[in-house]
Length: 362
Image 1 (cartoon, one colour):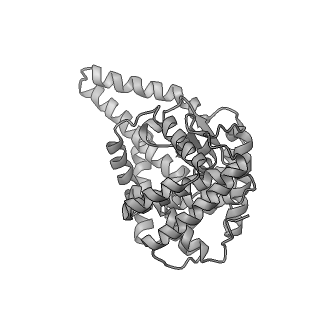
Image 2: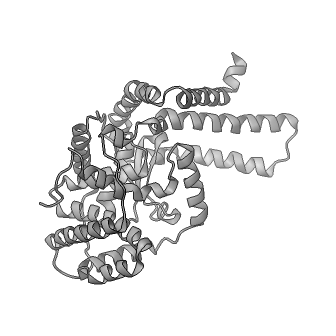
């Protein structure tokens, strides 16, 4: 028993590996259903109505732990160990990694075994070509201009102020209602926090992140306010157990489209339009340039404002970040890796042909 406790991290790591092997070789669906119904839903409920009620992001409460871990790493690098001391240090970090791996999956990451959304909603298989892209982006551009002019017809960049908690509550209500219409049973009250200091995520090419260890989503406090609704809704969908980035982008879009607030809808159109634009640009750069030239000047000003705001936080080793995240996603079964974000495009088209669709027009 003493040996077991001493090596608890390694033991938990082995248990998790065995469960994952079982899932891959026997039944992903079985593991997901057991996890989702009997573990994750309860974790979600217990956390959200206890620690999740705090006005302070839980990640900040882990600061002493990170300081202690940094101290241990520093001492490991600075100290010449004897055999006994080296074994103790290796044991510490082995247990730390093992416990971290276990908690990552136990608290959230077994949701990677969720059946594909296409199967859940019985989406038909389709393909997307350049003709479709042009048609779709033309339609979304018109809708985006409509919402933009409802906010302001001025061509200067928008300066939106909105209470974070009000926005968070609004999006949560919209998303829970949406997921329920899809036959899901979202539990709890997922929190999305503004993460300080500004740029801590944007400097690694990330607007938001869901951290399973604290059961909360986080959005960089330096993110342009026009991107708040779409990004908050994306991270919130992670909290409700969706893992694929393209699916979470899609859920974020549809969530925002349920709103009657032009600011929320405009934010979502901006997010979706940018994916369409960069995809079209890869197919036909001249066509994309012509389309951009003709859009409403106010939208151009908003896009420039977003770019300028992000420019305050230069990317730190973006290629390395992309490589690591691409590997992480593929390791967890997202075959398209980091490119999965742009799959919002095909998800929208599948949704439009399903019984769950509704018009984006108001």
